[in-house]
Image (tube, rainbow, N blue to C red):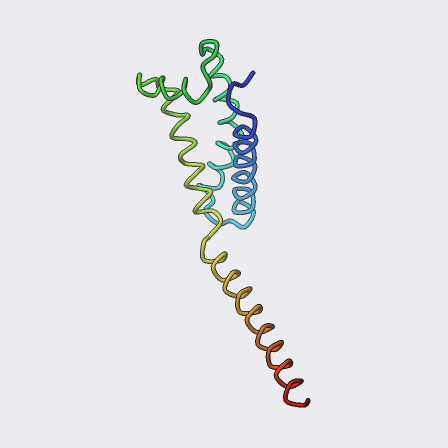
Length: 130
């Protein structure tokens, strides 16, 4: 059925699932409504389109090579599939909102620093009391 390595196929499916979750969350929040609805539609349809398009490949050729060759031949469906996957990749990067990730990471680092300072202050007091 598939000629690509299974770990790559699992990574692909996890990426599609991640994009689908990001799109649903943004659609519920009413953030980026058009992009999130397009992300939902493409995350559901692109794996099916890719599977149906790669049925016509020769034996021993994997899906990625077949789509790449068809893209070089300017096949319309290959162009749609590649641009759809590029959109999902960009949407995955935009969708996680780097600002929120940065703020969460910054808060986590400051909490660790505060705990470390409290720990060192506590140990210094114990040494001075002895």
